[in-house]
Length: 281
Image (cartoon, rainbow, N blue to C red; front, side, top):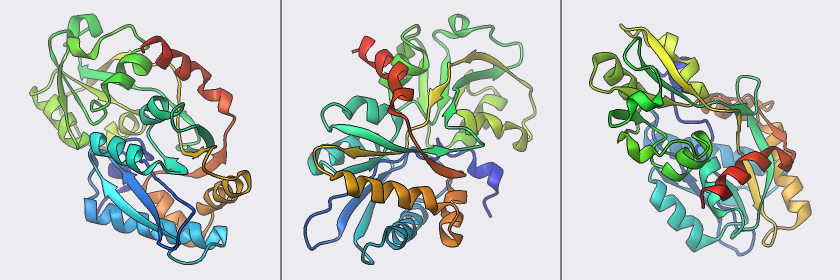
């Protein structure tokens, strides 16, 4: 049975991309992009189907208005987004920054996780092994977040460190990378906030040092394509998400992904990361 602590080791709770198309008789396609974690592809697909039923009920759409497709591959995620051009998406911050202009994306809601709508990224090493990122160059760096190198370079490292200077070891399982760090198979691991906060639950044998901490980075949730969705439909979908975690069935799904609630967003909170992304282009 997966504990809440272990669930927190999943990549950022909404490391997802969802596409919704409002027109047509067929169910509107929802593509879920989910990189890594201990939940199987089949289980995650079932959870997303259940989440869509809650969205339909809360938003007063007909049942099975939406259907979902699941992928764990970041490249396939971008391909699906490009081909289907969704009206709405739930996406990672890196994908949002990459596609926000081309897809006319406007943020609608953010997830709140552990009382926050932002997070910090950290690089951890075995205690006493390395003092900073400079000392780590040429050594192995693992993590579930390394498949989006542009985001790591431009936003997490703010353009100051090239991820290519490390021997990158991407993984789909945060637990596996941390145990490899503990055993000495890895020199360092890059963690998001949830993964870092769950370290105490793992019972690692060796204490860890944090040798890098990013600035605060906003969490991204639901975004809308302003050219393909009406304002009233955007509001309707946002309200359904804002009510989801207080709904009896919706709360179970929020708990699965470690989300306390979805809250309205001021788009200006993304100004800094948009600037950083542009500087790296």
